Image (cartoon, rainbow, N blue to C red; front, side):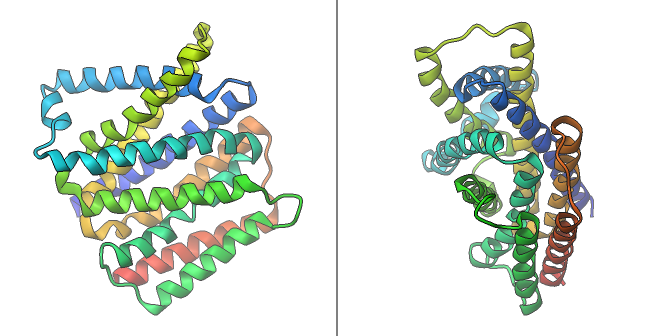
Length: 289
């Protein structure tokens, strides 16, 4: 029970910090900052804080140096793969409302269930499959698709949702190869180093305000990564038990959209949100029943 409560807390922490990162990223994008300025400066600050934290705990070597050489492959591969995910997030938030972006990410628990079935070999009954289908229908209700509001960024965000589900399923399956800090470090470092390549070709000296925005964003997304890694790391084969709490991101994403970007949620979209949350909860409950 204690482990389960910790996992729930970590998922909620992830959704709050994740939505905060999305809001800052959207703000940065609409103010014409380039992604490599945003991620290189923010990533550098976050990495320095992360290393200082581990040094203060006397555990830098313990978490960064893995037991076997072959253990480095998965954490580093996830980091390289994550480069594309965060670049997609940066541009997608410039082109679609943050509340729609959040709704699309809410397909992650459904994909997580599917991956849990085929990768973690967890049981998934008929009712859960039906609920998954209904959940995707809820996403369509939110999107209200037509030729004017469907674009490539919608599909790319769904790709991000699939990537998130796959990444954290792998963390559950291979939790023994690295600690949560190790997974987080190797997930974050490749993006920062990759951003340097572009930053050095187009350098900028940020103002105090810009530096604060970039630095806070970098630290927040690292906390978000760690919280999600930690949640599914401790959940092991039962990662889908804590998945319904991923829907709390709908609350934060909607609030940020309304407060900071004057976005609105109509009645039909609200109905779609309810369908997503209810169907997702039913799918996970029936699986674990």
